[in-house]
Structures are given as C-alpha cells and as structure tokens.
Length: 254
Image (tube, rainbow, N blue to C red; front, side):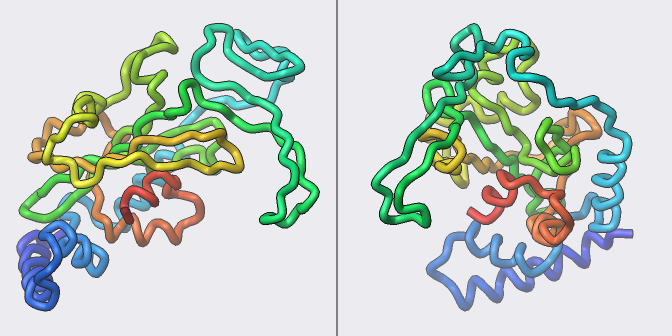
C-alpha cells in the first residue's frame, strides 16, 4: 500500500535541500531534480503500472496487415508521390541527395520521405498536476499501427492538426481542450515550443511540444486507457522493452 504521507515528507525534505544548494533554479526545475531521484506517485506503484501496461497490450485486439500501395483506399499512387485524395494529411515524396561531404555516403543517395501537410505535424502534450502536493503526469496507453507493442505509453495528447481539425471525420482526441490555447501566453505552460522531427524520415516536419500545469480533479480520467504516473516511473519504464513511446520520453526530459 502506498504511504502518501511518507512520500510527501521525503519529497519536501529533498526539495528543501535542493533549494538551499541551488537557489538560482526555479521551483519547477528543482521539483524535476527531485522527481528524478524518487517516485512521487500516490495513485499507482511501479509494479501496478507495469501490470496495467502489460494487460493493455495483452487485451488489445486489432488486425494490421500489409497491402499493396495501389490498394490503399482514398490514397493516390503516382510516379511523383503518394497522397490522399483530399490533399490533406501527408505525402510520400522521392528525394535525391547529392554532393554530400558531411555524411557517410559522399556521392549522395535517393530515398522516400514523408512531407506533412503545411509542414506542422501536430501537438505532443502532457498534463502535469499535484496530487497530495506531489507532481504527477497524465499518460495514455496508445495504439499506432507501426508500434512495437502494439500499445505504448504516450503523452496525454498526441495528435496531428488534421486529427484536431477532424479532417478524418472522427471525434476530437481526449484532452484537446486543455491545449487549445497553446499559441497564447498562458502562464500554466511549463514548456511550449516547436520541436523538430527526424529529418531523415520527415521533410521539415515539426510538432508543438507542450507541458501544462493544471489543478487536479478525479473527473479528469476519461477512461481506463489513461493513468497518472510520476517522472521517476517513466524513467524506470524506459528500461522496459519499447514500452515508452519516443514523444513521451522527449517531453519528460525537456
């Protein structure tokens, strides 16, 4: 059973120690230092979290199969690119790279690359709150067709702008309303910056990385695919085979 009071006392003890030794840091920076050294979760311990994630992977049922490119519904395949008939979402283009003295292939190479519609991919966002005066982060068990898993623990919100604008015809993703104001000067954002993606796979793509502090409410858990975790638990799960998705790993250490 989790001893909430014991965790809180130890957290405050370490927090005060860091405050004394590092007075130039902000309270959030000091809290993150402490969070790296101890688990602050009063909702679920690491064993329960691992069981939750393993059960999500075991119980998740979906069929994913490879099909010929020309069989893709609503996607057009031409000599120049693969694109959606609506002109939205993304395209797959061919690139030729030449005169490259800075890489291992001096003569250059050819490759396909994904070009996001309008270049900006979407939002990678994490909610942070205090439960029993201790920091917690809201994550989700998320499926993607290319996952090694198939479920990975991901940020609170991981959505393209196409998803947020409902261009696919489905519902908006959970918790989008917390981040609709990301382009304002809302002081609750601990982190709010554009993040570049892998330029070897994506053409000039970037995502908006967000970490937002909110007040805690029990009603914020919309379903059992979401759970409150600690930064320390995420660090520990990074040592578990492909369980933490790369977007969450990057956000938690920014």
